[in-house]
Image (cartoon, rainbow, N blue to C red):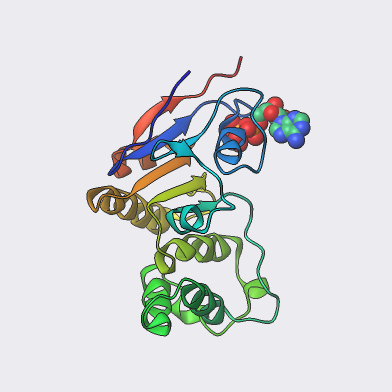
Length: 187
Ligand SMILES: Nc1ncnc2c1ncn2[C@@H]1O[C@H](COP(=O)(O)OP(=O)(O)OP(=O)(O)O)[C@@H](O)[C@H]1O
């Protein structure tokens, strides 16, 4: 099987539990080793040891690990600074506002609800530059407002020419984001 994610599209990996969606995403960024095949970015093997590749590809796959004593705002500010984003604090505050997290900006992640922690994970994609986003079931633990925001935001990323590859169990999100569906079989 050959699959491509083109510029300006959201691709949804869809299939039953255990079909291999997460494994496929992990193989793309080298967290797992495929038995066969290769992953190319712009025609070259994707290797996250290359700083340019790390600047292009953002993977939100595992539950993000947070520093226990840095606040929500400090985390996003730190990540923006690490990527030399101009005016990192404003970018971080804007991301928090977009994700409805302003109220908890000065809390540490351990005190957030699980849905708020999921929103914080997604906020990382608003403060770091990327061309290809890999994300595993981004809809999980989000409430209806969060899911609506996510669909619109993903569609906007595609319109702006960025690419997203996500595992997804939500037909609603597939439709809202305008994702192209790639079926991953259970066999
Ligand atoms: N480290 C591992 N060792 C052995 N088996 C594994 C390992 N990681 C994944 N698997 C198996 O590979 C299969 C694919 O798992 P994967 O998590 O990729 O599925 P998925 O499509 O993302 O499922 P879900 O919809 O439940 O998230 C499963 O049967 C899983 O148990």
